[in-house]
Image 1 (spheres, rainbow, N blue to C red):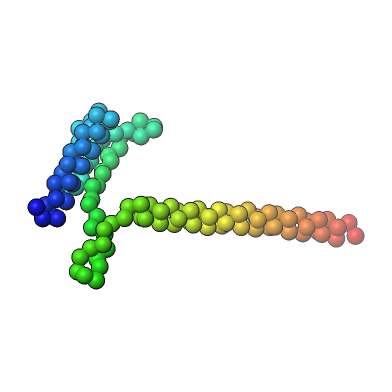
Image 2: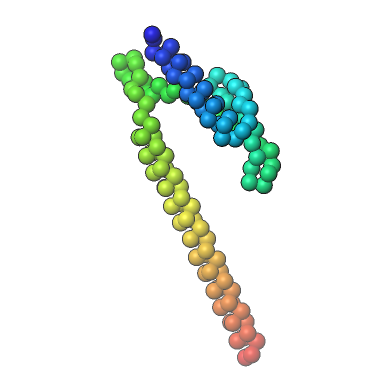
Length: 123
């Protein structure tokens, strides 16, 4: 079998497994909406109807100089994603901290201006 045929068989097997598991878990019908794509209806925490679409892909990895592909490394990608997410969270926290600090400084300056105006008014 060619690599492509093996990947197609794997995709079909995984899709069927996921289709069966999700169908049982959510007690709903599963729909094949594209190549490697499943969809189903469910409800959210507030009982609103929602559609969910799941895509299954068999990544090939990156092209190498030999004309083939280097194997996809999901653990490496997960670590890179975690690091990127942590970096974004740290930046977001730093921005929130700066905004809070700036707001406190503005509040302090406003109090100082108000106190200065009161002092000038008393004189």
